[in-house]
Amino acid sequence: MKVVTLAGGTGAAKLLRGLLQVMPAADLTIIGNTGDDLELFGLSISPDLDTIGYTLSARVDETKGWGVAGDTWNCRATLESLGENTYFALGDKDIAVHLWRSERLRRGVPLSRVTEDLAARWGLGCRLLPMSDDPVRTWVKTPAGWLAFQEFFVRERCEPEVLDVQYESAACARPAPGVIDALRAADAILICPSNPISSVGPILAVPGIREALHERRTAVTAVSPIVGASPVSGPAGKMMRARGYPVTVGGVAEVYDGLLARLVIDHRDRSEEARLGERGVGAVVTDIMMTSRDREISLARTVLEASR
Image 1: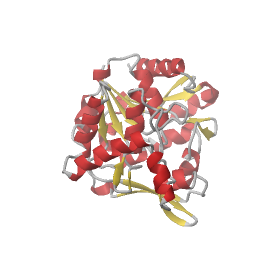
Image 2 (image 1 turned 135 degrees about the vertical axis):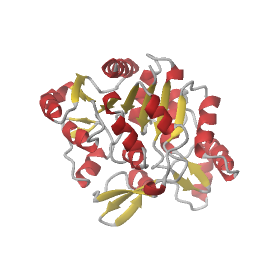
Image 3 (image 1 turned 30 degrees about the horizontal axis):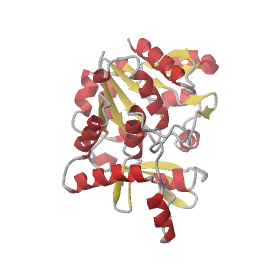
Image 4 (image 1 turned 180 degrees about the horizontal axis):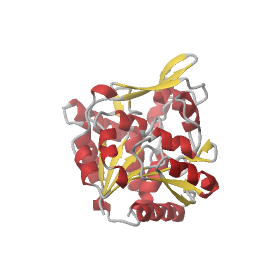
């Protein structure tokens, strides 16, 4: 079964790690969010792509859920001694990856090719694609003005009120090579339990991707990032409210209106099953909290079985 996933950061990475335990890696294509990307100290950084790559190659720092295990911080300490603001923490091994990516991009190699090459060098076995080779950037409107996503997420620790979210340059971006073909050829399309506004939203904002999912609606399953009235992690609740969606599994279904055949929800949201049915979305009720490797695998198996 050919499976294509739309993926953000840590929550997606856990589900993807589970999937690779229950299906052949060669049958999995991951379309990663690049709306979180940034340039810092001359480096091109792709946080979500890197988190997925580090996790699936067993390099990730399990305590933090991002970055490289056992990394050192000499470069960061030196920058701080020079008076630089290093709110976006980069370890030395992490910086080496960004240096390698940045140099190839400067030579004119597109991000999709750089990412596929990196995935191969890390031995992922699956295909990892950015949503677009064109730069798309997520901006968050707060009472103090617009912030780039990482300024809001990391520097401000998601504390400001969210008034709006925009995807700069999305309208003129094109899907990366292979993205639309993969969606059209997939037996199952999975939307990972990522923030629907800031992680999946930028992917869907690239012209052609939402339309491709709509055409394949019967093959599309999403995993809810919301349990009860709260996100599993991160600022999804603030962002959903800012966009006018209720912070419920029903709100998740609204964000993905016209795209879903099924939504995997936690057993604590079983009461929402009938409401989802009224929207034409089937509910798959299970334990969606991935607090261990066994639970990652269990959820992955449930999602695949539902998709069949």
